[in-house]
Image (cartoon, rainbow, N blue to C red):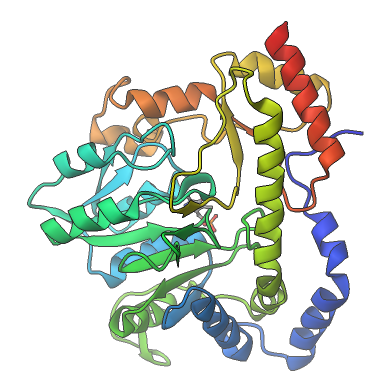
Length: 367
Ligand SMILES: *Cc1c(COP(=O)(O)O)cnc(C)c1O
């Protein structure tokens, strides 16, 4: 039996009666955009993160754009972003007319390099976007210190780390404002595109609420240029069913990660780390190997699904070429691009399946 990188159908079957009832409830209500379902989800997610405000939006990417707009970041401003992340982290900065300033990552956690972050600050820098990549928290204590010292805002990209903790606090509650993605494959995933902006700041929350609906101060009366980036009631109802399960699902991901750690110890494969004070929620279990491409082929031949997050560092992507970074500018990001490989991980993954993955990797390493 093939082992997929990710299987979302099993989880649906586990909670099918609740999901089906939630969908029916929305269909019967005749209310499909924003409304009470979205409001309820916003309150539940904010409460989960111990924050005051959640604003449901159409995607995680839009959450980033709206957070930047809410902070009045635009043309002439610079925002510091890691060179190794999902493209949207930097794409959002371009979308608001500001300049993404890239810095390399640290290879042990794949999060933004602190020394380079501080060096990249200029008089135009307005914010830092740390990314909790693969589900591991960035070093927020140090990042907050840098931001505070230089008067910068922190926008957490928490798309991959819903439920993760840093020194006892949830990621997404550590900066000025945070962006969540409920893309179906994320740790808390909808059945379509969905996202949220979360913050303790009422002014920022109100601004995002206005921007997500055409910039309307009241209906049909725009106060500023906004977007159509509203969350669907159907997705909100589905996410309300899933939210109470997310801690258990994350615990299952952590157990699966533990099995991989045991099975791959001493093989020469670089496994993910969990730093002291951090709770990794393993959105992805990403290993590194200099033989990544052949290893991937070998696993594929054995029916094991893997993927490469990410196959290109941001500075070499077409839309960011105009920034003028050369190949080699961010060696650690480029090494991660060459060597990183995501293994199957999801809450329903079975131990026997993982044993097969481990066995294939061990065999490859010995050959
Ligand atoms: C998924 C993701 C996003 C974007 O979220 P969408 O909901 O797909 O728009 C942004 N940043 C990171 C790091 C992501 O993984």
